[in-house]
Length: 294
Image (cartoon, rainbow, N blue to C red; front, side):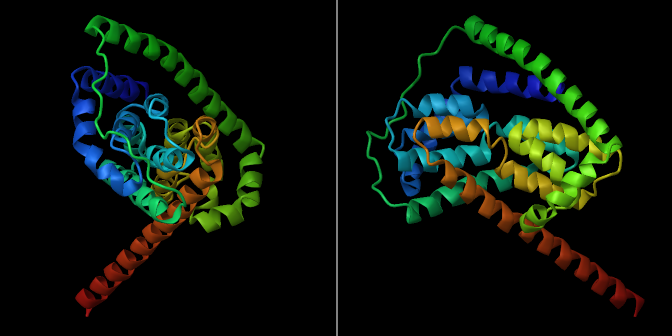
């Protein structure tokens, strides 16, 4: 996970330095009116898509958006932030990378469009131009990346090792079974296996990367089926880190319950849709097999 995170974040740093992220933002800015957002919000979205929530919020607070616009932008970014790092981690658990990217990207777009239709309020009108940021020297950019990485790597090591130890202790004393039974009704509503209850808690409190780290461990022990992993990845790809990220967005004006509820409802639809897809495929395979035998 550390190899993935360091390598991908380095590439993203280069894309930012050479202006690729700003170029994409300018190309997308005319589309954002359909989401109830000014063109300038494209930079905040693209920054979050390639980097993380912090960069998206930093860009958003310069735009003087109202609560409605911050909420819509927040839902978009929550669905599809830190895309390449988190997708690489999800792929490590066994879920197809392309599917995860498509699910998360289009989820943010669809939810933003729907929220723009149903939320009361007026669309803010700014000048529509994505402003070119002041670009630091490459040495300074590289130095900042190295500092961030040196902070992130020990943090990841500590948290992932602690999670693995905690999982082992909880399994040994039967705590995982207790939690799974207690959350069984919730997991059923979400369309997830009760075996995913602890992983769901980890992803919702600590984030997708740490939830995936725990998932890799569980999958390696044969405790999770492929459909369990794909269903959970679909859900937590859209709805994870619901403590820190939601609090941060709420602090700049977003409506917290819309951030949570909209993504939970959409995650339920997608996961049950995935289960329907598996059911249809299974029935089709049985039909084809019976036809061949006949």
